[in-house]
Length: 367
Image (cartoon, rainbow, N blue to C red; front, side, top):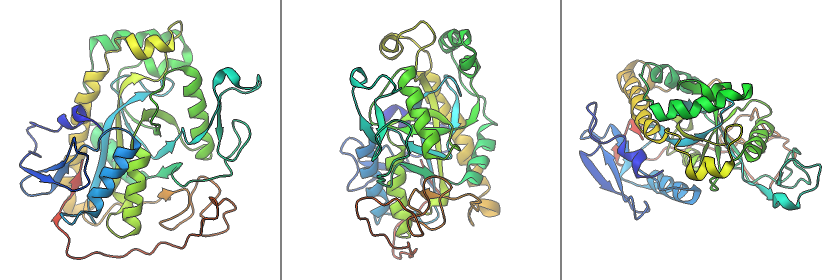
């Protein structure tokens, strides 16, 4: 995450997260503080961009004695690229799955066999489309679908921002029926997020990563948005949940669409990425606040009646290994059962939740 995404929460009328600025050891040197309301109920931070920055900052947050996060709701909120088969510029998306799409073998597309559609090959496999036989554990995360549904309900009460430039640019996608969603006005969507440190553009890469999303979620995931941090943040949170420091059932992943992940028919991928004035950047930043604040208010206002006790997850939540218990509804099954896929001699044991005492500021929401 980067400063413009954080700025969306500053100077707003609903609450003031700049009332307290708390320096946290281990945060990015560029963004060393967590920002909180005077009561400490709502806090906000910027992780820095890319997977390493996100994992490092979230790990530092979870391990900090300055916060008590055991009942905190986390709203991961940032801008993203969007697949025009599913969504459009300035759309607001909420994910159930986060998929680390670039965690694969890669061959230069100029050197691939003629019968391959992409240079990306799942780990431990020998061709695109084969299920990976080498698993790292961060490939897929699934979050609480019931909580996502509530967040979507809250967000749909917002009036979303748009721009004339975005409307003009998305109209180009109407030329292809497959991109009909890309030509529509922005709305709030339920679809999934791809994580990659590489900022990519093009239909072939988009299709390859969409296919990988389908493969890794056993057909349940819908490749929609592209980001650089979410799997990294979720892995840090999962480890915190295993240690009893956070509740993995209290995570919401929201992305707003700033640009298309591929060009419209007749446009080059390079022009789409480097030169096109897509018009989605400013509205996507505005919609972090417009949709996100409805989610925050919904949780705070419903704290006593719903959210203090937690929203029961009726779906599996966690990683591909089943680290937090349960059997994943994606992948080969929990590693703690009869999972045939292990990563290079990994010996895992069932997670046992433990409670931590003597921690700091009790926080309802972290943004």
